[in-house]
Each structure stands twice: as C-alpha cells, then as structure tokens.
Length: 114
Image (cartoon, rainbow, N blue to C red; front, side, top):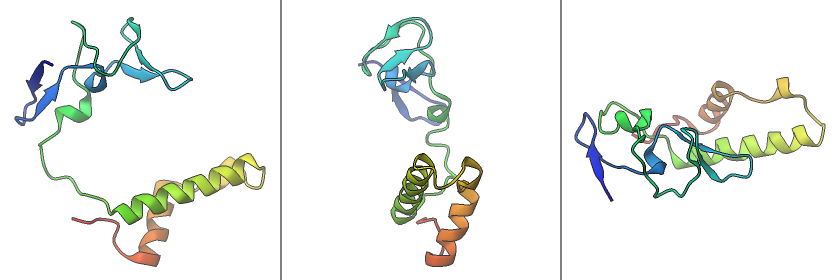
C-alpha cells in the first residue's frame, strides 16, 4: 500500500480510511463523498486527499486524556441518551462536554494522563 509523509514526517497510508472524502452512510457502511459510492477501508483512488487530523499528526503539543475519563464520558452519554429515548429528559437537559469534564474533575481530578 502506498504511503505519503505529512508535514511532520509521519507516514500516512493512502487509502479510504485516511481520506478527507470518507463518510459513513445511514447503515454505517463506508462511502466516498467524492463520487465513488460504497468503498472498502483499504481502497484508494486518484482523488485521495489526506484528512485534516492526519495533517497534524506528529505536530506535538497535544494532551492525552485518561482512559477512565473517556469511559466516564461514554457511560454518561449512553445513560443520558437512554433517558432521552425513554422520554425522561429533554434534549436541552443533555450534558455538554464542559459539564461532563467539570463533573469528572470534581469526582476524580484532572482528565489528562500526560
């Protein structure tokens, strides 16, 4: 499989998975928004363009969130969505990221591992 290096020297595989045109259809299948229809993750074409997030890979300066925080956030979101679908809360009562971060920090401290 062909690879290219981004501005920071990180090798990126040239395939659908790393392409800016990759999307998911309603059924969760990979689709090319550049006109190729349903594709496999390893497919590539002449229209490939690197995802923006991969352009910054290797740049540095990022922070790593604790696995416990990510699990906490995921569990809270699932719990709220179930309450929402059961009609027990309204969409305006769903927590945003800042609220979940604050709640976690009060209970467990900093959300970052590094």
